[in-house]
Length: 165
Image 1 (spheres, rainbow, N blue to C red):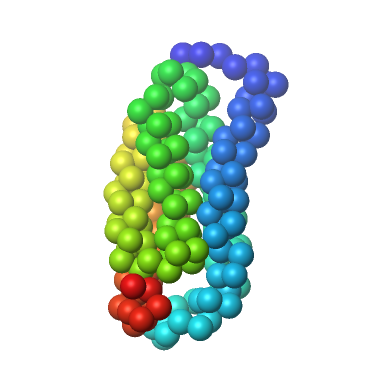
Image 2 (cartoon, helix red, strand yellow):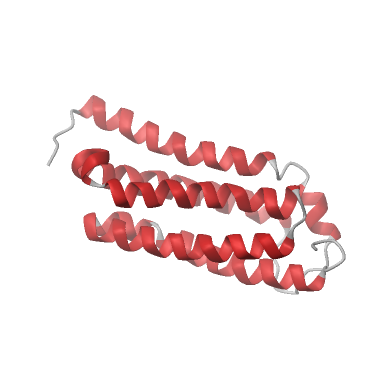
């Protein structure tokens, strides 16, 4: 097990939070007009208003960054290569979803992406849990939200075939 100094741990925390929020920024670049686009779509009655998504995702990205940091602290990237690689891949798939749905209006591809994202989150959660159970537990809200978002993506896509081809 690698021992990190306090300074290295703080730098690591900032780095993993930065990685998470960079992915958020990449995704949100496609979502600049998401609020107005989302309100134009036919949505199921259970769909949340647009202003809910930003705060929820902010908390989730923070939890993801802390979870990755906790895993990294156990022995660095080498010791947790598979778990942290899964984490990075799911972040990329997460960022791609916003481009598919909001940027390019591709409902079917966005749905396929979010299903893949769900699988990757489960794999990451399990890999994190094996290394540091708290890190895995921190991903549970993310998994629950993406489960909800998956159902919402499917419903909105089905209700708007002319817009989300």
